[in-house]
Length: 127
Image 1 (spheres, helix red, strand yellow):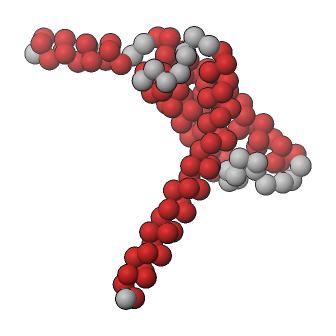
Image 2: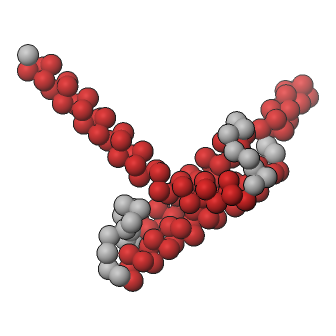
Image 3: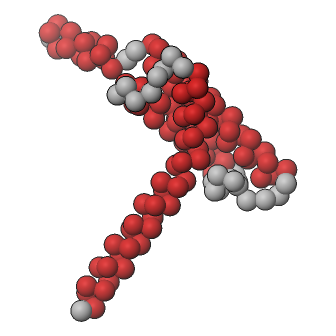
């Protein structure tokens, strides 16, 4: 039993690094601030969201929660993989600001690919 606990402890210690956690929290905070700014501007000027996020009721809370968690998780995993210089404030800013602006485009691309695949399946079935 002690051996199993030691293996688990080694696995967790190889994944968790304090500096990565701080980097991820900072990135997540910046992302949340950007989403707050987007929400405020969309309500203040009565326009659509610049980030193409749906706000209203519980959807607002979900948007804020998922944007922040997504940016933090992307920063943590990217830092763990060595994709980012976690010592740099610039990396923190780029990921925190870039995440909310890149994710809608990624979602759009996936939706378009799904539509193309569905169209191809329908055309194959017709033949």
